[in-house]
Amino acid sequence: MTVLSHVSGLPRHLNPRLLPAARRFPPLAVIHHQGRRTGRSYDTPVQAYRTGNGYLVGLAYDTNAQWARNVLASGHAQMTRAGQRYTISQPRRRGPEARQELPAPVALMMRALGIDEFLEFDAARDK
Image (cartoon, rainbow, N blue to C red; front, side, top):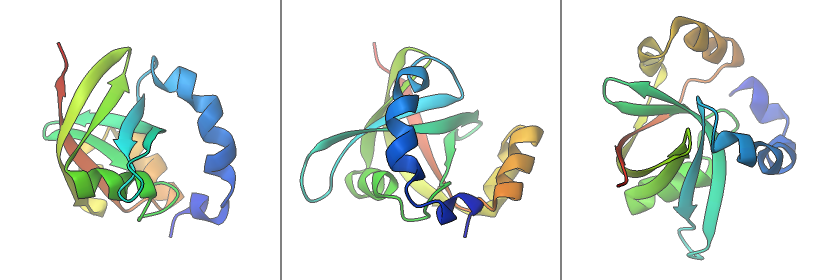
């Protein structure tokens, strides 16, 4: 369980304020996904780090976050990072070993916050 999971209302209040910056300033990014049941479109700000295998996002608030479940269920989504749009494919869950692929200060932060679950995916830049 992460430190942030104890602050249940934080994403609801923080995410709308982060969205404008998340589209432009890495490592922030916005995941554009559709609800599994409703088909409704959602935009979720995350921290997406480039690795040798794609991008890695820590599941900071909940290991079963709705956005991650939506992406895993559909097998695809979109991402906006640094003003560029990407198509996400091959989403997969990763455990604490994924921290080894992150920059050292980020890995330490994730460990300190108790973030042990990650979503990794491939992302191709849209033309």
